[in-house]
Length: 242
Picture (cartoon, rainbow, N blue to C red):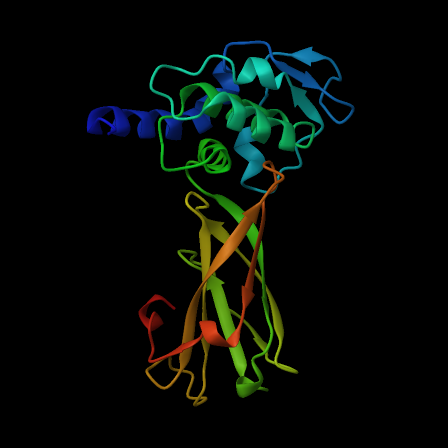
């Protein structure tokens, strides 16, 4: 069982590492820039420049960085949760597709993460974006024939951006949702269909919270959610958040 004090300390440390790892690095020289890397040569895991500060604003950091997966996974700190085979499998899956910030975040997770409830991908997201980031998420619906020609409105959960709207046509819709959101533990969107057309979200309308898939590349994550009729609930649940 995880000791509460160590749990809290590791959470604070891993949150701050997303802001500090670019300056401090992870100790071992295990990162090699590929053709898409900045500089094209061997560099330490700390040589990530200032890219991390701009990632949340849509910065286009170079990808194509490869690391020595065996070295990255060889020496986890005492009490760390991850085992070498899982660590190396994840590393090989993404090696060469991440940039230096993503590779450095993974290297930190491989040796220092004590959050036993999360996987490598979750730790890497949390390390890179402890304060969230600005994103554009795609929301697609189909099979919504019962709401044909009605207006559907949505925004990222927790975002202060205005609702984005479109009409449901042929039972389908597409929306691009922009805003600042956290992707730690996943991201979500809230949507509303104004069934009675009174421009007031209430019990006669339909709402839903949609969990979004968050996918690499780590330097420019892609968020997407699918909406189907059985996800929609009548009764005004969540109206106070719109």
